Image 1: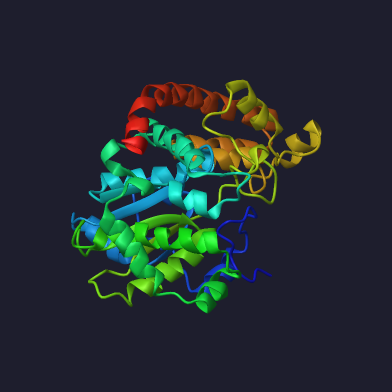
Image 2: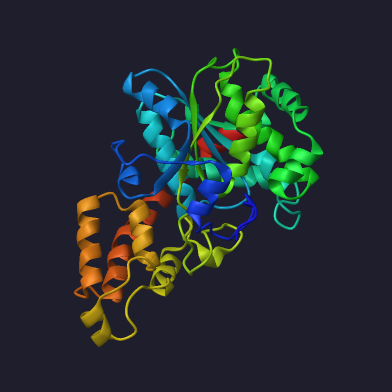
Amino acid sequence: MLKEIDPWGQLKVTDYEHVFRKFGLKHFPKNIKLDHYLFERNIIVGHRDFDKVLKRIESKKSFVNITGIAASGPYHLGHKVDLDLFKFFKKKGAKNYFAVSDLDAFLSRPDNKIPDLKTAKRWAVKNVADALALGLSKNDIYVQSRKENRYYEFAFELSKKITKNTFEAVYGHVDLGKIGANFLQYADIMHPQLDEFEGSMPSVTGIGIDQDPHARLTRDISKRLPYKIETPSFIYFKHQSGLQPGAKMSASHPETAIFLSDDLKDAEKKINRAFSGGAPTLEEHRKKGGNLEIDLVYEMLKFHYPNTKELEKIGKEFSSGSLMASELKQFAIGFFIPFLKEHQKKVKSNLKAAEKIVYG
């Protein structure tokens, strides 16, 4: 049984009901119809106070849209889900804040991964180039180490709102680097509501369910500040599995993920080697069909393939046994490899802009 959630761990959260019960998350209502496939496919599973943001969307009023990435490694398909959700809210009229967290990465990652701030900044350039290539504008993005002074003042103010015992109770440990990184994360989420930025309004942050400890503490702190700050809302998406069962895609474990920078031949090999829900033999597969619940290639398509009707058709064919596991993988290769090829071209054309955002 899960005792606590580790935002820095690699294990995939699978017992969603237990997490919902223990930590008080609400299921995402099925009657809410939002025009993105992430909401159609049971990928968005929970929320905290999303109804406040939904009212702003429906009334065409502004709200804050904040997410980001720790500058500690390359973008993979799991990161792309978060950015896809960010772009959806951007289209709905949000005030957009995409944090590239170089300071967070330096503080919270081990020295053998991020030995110095220069390394974090080099990753920040690559991350920004990916974000631009995926459709963000330079005005959507900020780098922690280049933020305004008021942002840092606010982070220090937040640091006095948490005790050692509270941190240990929520996270299960007291790691000084991660404590420092967390204050920056809380500031990332709440600073847009300060008068110096957008002012008080509802905000939404899309996160994987493993990040809920950050959400709970952010919401708690927001209620104890001498500022008019709306309690931040969060929307939760399912983890995208790694290429083998039991783990999420992780930049720390390259074998688990398809990276947006992967050599195209390597990416194709990874898809071909991904865990399949196909039956052990051709005859058995024809007779019994494949298991979509455990097929990780189909899951990748579920998270990224935009045509829901076509995806459902492919799923039915695989489940019935008329589509082989090898054919499903070839379909996925036909979708992901051209995407990666085009994305990598866009990254190259955005590197100079990314360097300017990171270094000035």
